[in-house]
Image 1 (tube, rainbow, N blue to C red):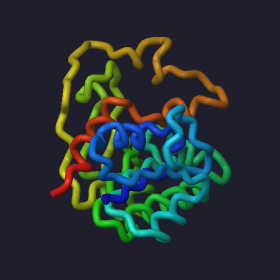
Image 2: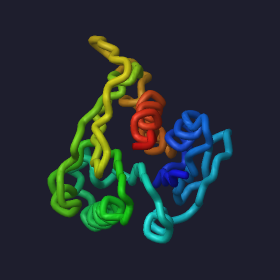
Image 3: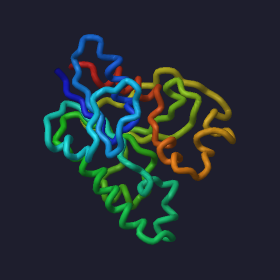
Length: 204
């Protein structure tokens, strides 16, 4: 049985996509996050530090979505203007690197485009840049993948538009300040989760 850890995921999106693709019951899939799982499917979820599982148990594959608030290139200007932000960035980048260095044979880490200060701590740039519209989603949002012993994701259903739904005034890219803004912007698009499930969990 293939053991799969979905780190830093409270939504259950990738975990449940893998469970749905597991017709023969070949996968043991667990999500882990500091927050409780919000998925209605109630799959296995560990509420706590994902590193506890990544380093404390044997896993064949890990897909991780570490927090990106202080690592994203879109917010790099705040490093020079907001007190304490550099310290938070350092902590976030070191957490990212711990995930990347976990003793797991196959690893994928998903994050937005990082700024150069984060990359210096993480130790290397991403291996692939994908867009939701390559996987059947009406959205444009550059997403980076750091890969270890995994192939690059192949597009499954490319949507070509001049302007995608998340770029409209009511779209995800235009969300105003709110307690849920960060959570909503961090969600993995279903089309990407389905591609991960189909392309990364096959034996051999």
